[in-house]
Image (tube, rainbow, N blue to C red):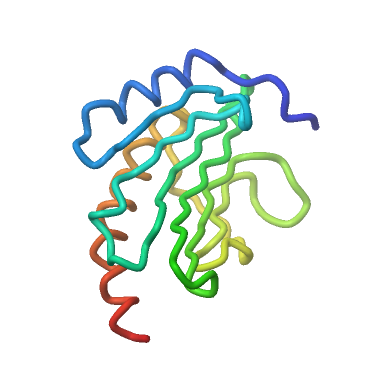
Amino acid sequence: MGRTSVDDRVLRDIADEWRGLNWVTSIRVRPRNKSNKVVVELEANYYPSEVRQVSVEFEVLVGGDFFVTYREVWERKADDYRCRWDRHANDHNARDHFHEPPDGEQAVDRDDFPKYPFRMTELVLRFVERRRGLAFEDRRRD
């Protein structure tokens, strides 16, 4: 299946949902280098000083499939942190699955994703709020 039929309406709604949060530094809808996504940049000052960049990327397709990636870029590449929520037909997992941190490689089936892709913003916002505190704990473990 090609990933070309992006749902522009849902992407705009997702962007609107993140606007106004004081820890969001920029929101780009379908930027040139990622023309099928909404890219949300988060304020790195809410994370340990070793974190250089934090972002969330949403891709939502017309049929309801989606791909949401959370990424932290740390000073040391080995500390980078990434995970992804996916809904799509595949041969490795259930249609709804989560690629676990810290590297986003291991996928586990999930049954708690909301029916409508827009509602993923709530799940991801809760994750980001929890993760901001956990990032400090990860730093202390080094």
